[in-house]
Image: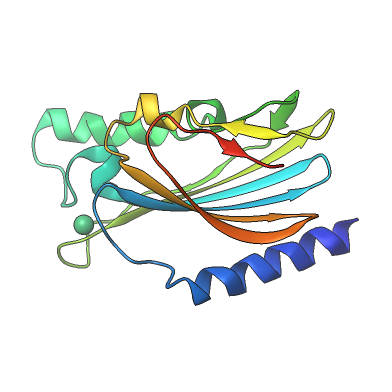
Length: 160
Ligand SMILES: [Zn+2]
């Protein structure tokens, strides 16, 4: 089971590269989703602007607090992703920008869920909590294979 999950993760990595991973367009973001039975692994890669509203070192107190708030919000998977099964998420891995390399910055976050049964859908509270997201490219790997989907605000991710 563990080996299968690893292989799926490897193949989604290849898929991401083929789909020009890392294109930086404000409003757009990319998620890699691997569903292996009751396990779900989601990796988000987003321009920092979608979450913060800016992409340079914070200046005002408002902006400094915004960086802290967003970093804190990203620690809770349920603010972004909600598989429709009873799922527990392990501690996410959130990488906030250091704002050191020029004009553009990205935020990335990884979420791993263990569910009590197989989810058939992942709801996306991120649309509501982060209005900066205007579209999501989803690289999905399930036991049925892999595909790429484009989602608009308000849409959910169907795993069937
Ligand atoms: Zn940017």
